[in-house]
Length: 253
Image (cartoon, rainbow, N blue to C red; front, side, top):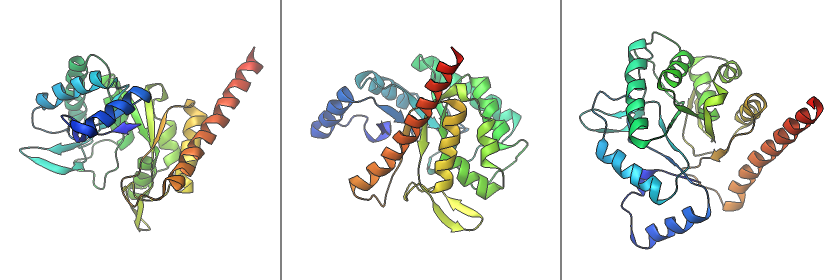
């Protein structure tokens, strides 16, 4: 299970007790909204101290964030694209390093959906891989974001996926999106996962092996049994690829 730490830090009472009960029973990860790793503003150390304490309290397995920014002199309440430049690679990687040093472990950065590429000097793929390598951090692989960006920016999603560093994957996201136009998809987490996105997840398991995968749904939430059908589809993909991997290992002996 995954929660946004900003929604739960300093929450007490029955809600805090309920979260503690769940985090003692199930493995939890946290997916931040406010780190703003690409921002020109200083890192929010008060937030990071609270996140560090929250991770200890709830035995959090992984802290992930977005490879984007959402603040400057104030909070923008949206995920803005970092310019794909060599200077930005160094700047962002240095800030990720500060966060990792403070927390005492690697964090995972998510490949994000974006709708403009200001000051672009390199491709999204080149930028993402350069940051991951220079920062020596993990990757939160969002296959829906790859598909959305492939439509909006005109690239082959399978080729993009194949060029990512699979050894850095901490876990994955899969979600639905909104079709605004033939050449514009909006990452909403408010619809069912579509077949091309399932195909990307299938390809990711084939190339990188099975990794933990979270179904995101933020609104237009259907009955639980419908959500669980998508969760079950993830599990079926994972089980099939796990069996294939075990078979290949047996044949190699």
